Image (tube, rainbow, N blue to C red; front, top):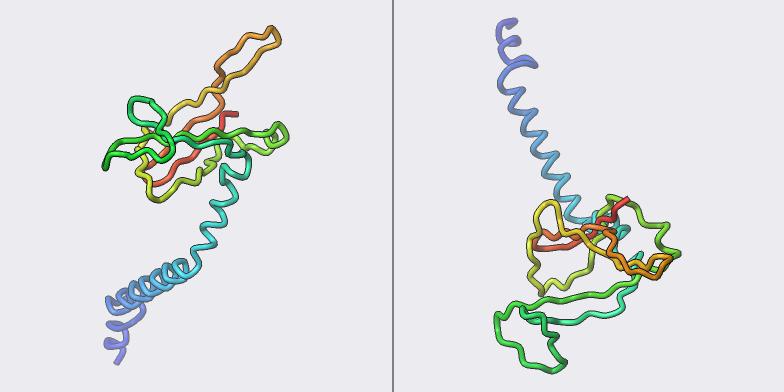
Length: 155
């Protein structure tokens, strides 16, 4: 009886299998619960929406030659286009911007985004100096992964 008890005791192969099954069941339940509440993950991302700090001024569609597409124009199927947005950030909102945080842009799910290299694209901003000169000053970096786009601001 003692030998039988030791063979099937707490450290045997059956015990290890049961523990693995319990862990798998727990992880499956956890993933199902997460699927039931996608709003929790979305709420965290919504906190850092670009729209919360910037105001959309305009959006315009351009062809691959850089010519703006006029309203009601017929567009060739599968033609490569660019959608350019113009935003303004109010001076009062500038203090709310955190550096090195991903601020997500709302993009139509019908658009196919490019994948931008890991280092992103440096975004310049036109700044007028005290002397009246206009300078290009980098203020952030644009990223995209083919499905979504985001901006991270420099310190």
